[in-house]
Image (cartoon, rainbow, N blue to C red; front, top):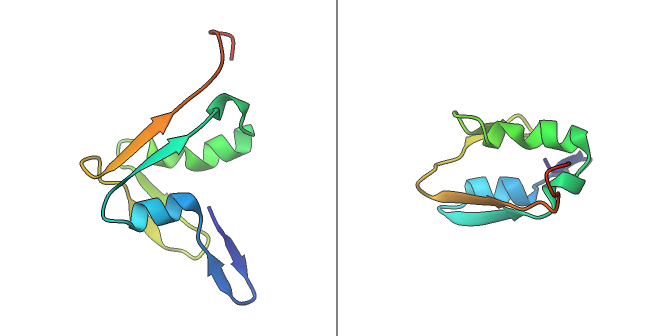
Length: 78
């Protein structure tokens, strides 16, 4: 999500990806992620593809320009 500090907002990789004209984001080993983090990023998987960041800016994923790959290592048990 990035972070708000006394000097301003520090963007995350996801924010930079959504602000770019196009790109590929790979989330590796999502099955090993903290469940709270997964809840936070699930909005980019939703049909509207929107995410609101700590500085109040909402960005929308364009499925024709922003591609997403997610990997996991489970064998059906994760």
